[in-house]
Length: 164
Image 1 (cartoon, helix red, strand yellow):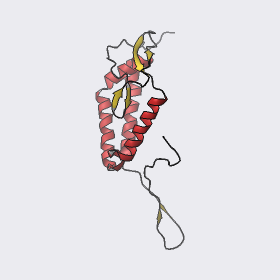
Image 2: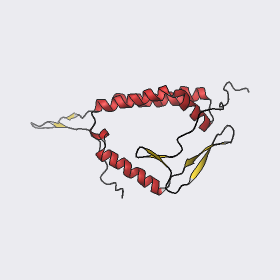
Image 3: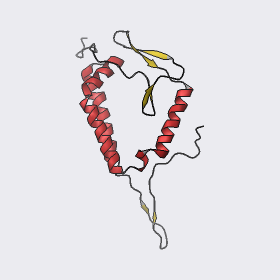
């Protein structure tokens, strides 16, 4: 049976992000190890990517926790968070062709499918959560007596989790 889908197109897209993104910086792994990512359509190596290990994960967790505890996002107005998430979705749409080409190169699917499904779903996800950013509400809870009882939702780092 003939396929109606063309194989993944050879892409001229440049692969530049091959290091670990930790604390808003692209850095090599602590060990210096890398691994090959392979184009499944051709079996050829696309590039070498930094291979993280426990030290890199610890570094990323510490950076994430510091950003959570002291970063601007935590105290930023919800409407501004939504605006930034919409901006990210706009940038993904702006670079949809490049992102679809990278996705096709990495997993072997046709560029048209990567753009219509993968990139579009990513944009949709960011827009969905951008819309919810200022819609997180508490609830009033009916209780006996002359009391006003309510819940208030707020981000919270689990206290039982310890990252040393």
